[in-house]
Image (tube, rainbow, N blue to C red):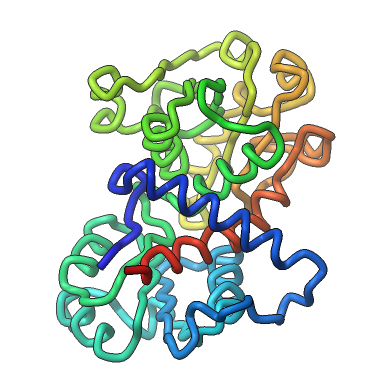
Length: 308
């Protein structure tokens, strides 16, 4: 049984295989209506539980559509319906769900919830997002970069803003795919020390640069994320805005990157906050290609999880 929990837990051979599968499935669907099922219907007669403790637009829609295109049946379950770990242990929930479905995707808060569910589940589990990581998004980002610019190996990726869950998965991907990564953001929002302190031992070309103009020089890929969460209170939001304003991705900043640099944002975005609309809608932006590729890469992940 194969789980997809984090990029760091998956071999580079499997990661590249997933990306190749995603590209092939995407190409095979050119010109087809969205409801057309994929040839062979690899998830035929399979039921997939899509469990959301956190609300979602892209993850919910892309997994639901993906399961249908693969010939399977999606079962959407919200956090209010499930109440994971409240009233029933996560381990019991895992055992019960495993009797009903063939695959589980979980979008949750704490990574411990994900790992405990996977430990006791007898069917594969996919990480749809936790507070600590977002591997499906980064796989879509790498797929998007390689569609536009070729191999990401040896390229320079610069992250602006908060050292959050999306950045954490970028850092894990830097080791697997062998690209350099720069974090440019305020010290107060630095990435987790648990992840960054071992970067040299892992051979990751990683550094922190507080000067955005210096950090972005000759970048091949520029990425950012929203500054605030929907769960943040107004005081926290204002504080984060003040800290992150110097790291906004705007036209002046992007002009310092390589002329062929791509701009990515995992969405949803607060336009003219973390990035200006001119950048988001500019010629270097691939934000909607990223969003589409979530569908294709997640379909490939589901196929990989269920493959022998």
